[in-house]
Length: 325
Image 1 (spheres, rainbow, N blue to C red):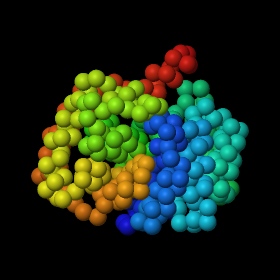
Image 2: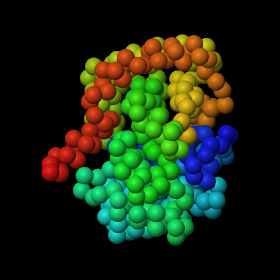
Image 3: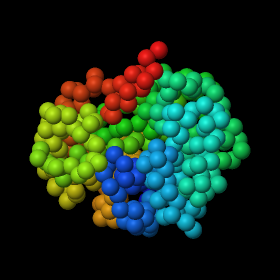
Image 4: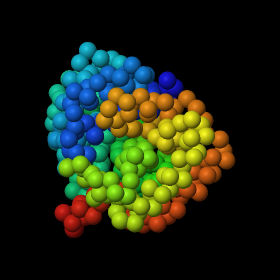
């Protein structure tokens, strides 16, 4: 599988990565831990070297499952995790890292992300602590997730940001206007999450889909009434394009994402072995220019209608309510 460098760092990753939020048993509904372990093993067999997790995913459960799956296999993986925004006090960062390392069964992370910016803790001391951890060899690269250009600039005044992890897919295009060009200009890798738009781009959802208990996708912007139906209609317009290539809709979405200039390695969730196998078949082929135009024509109107609604998860609405000053 093609390898790509994360920005200006020395970290090389597979062209797609495995995201493990769905393995947490939280937000997405219940998870089958044994199948999750099989997914990780199959990903490694297929050449996926990048695996991403976070302490916030199921209060550490995703990291614990991943630690089980990687026992005896740590040297095959570029391993990334994230510190929660309420742990951005420097002393809390170190404790959070220790917890993640213990759950993952390793002595270092290849990439350590700040999961969300914080309204409570300044970024300067947090970045300085991360640089200390890098100097100690406990992390190899520093990342930030869900950061705007001004926040990237502020973080960069206190350390080196190697990689950004933003939401990005054909239906959610926030980074195209300013963030992606900024990262290209400054040598910052881009590791997008939500590459399949929380499942919308798989073509498996319908207007009457009944979501499982614990599945909270309907709280997010793309799943709101009206937007959800328009997104599903857009995805149906993509189906003939995928069929012309003999590909599935997820494979079309993945090929589109990996073709975007400046994108390093998209993260894609997989709940089953069949899903990781389908995802891997999304790389190694090319979408023709005319079809890229057709994909834009189908999907851009959805983004244009929602781009002023804030972040995908409503995080900032909740954060500002908790810290009004």
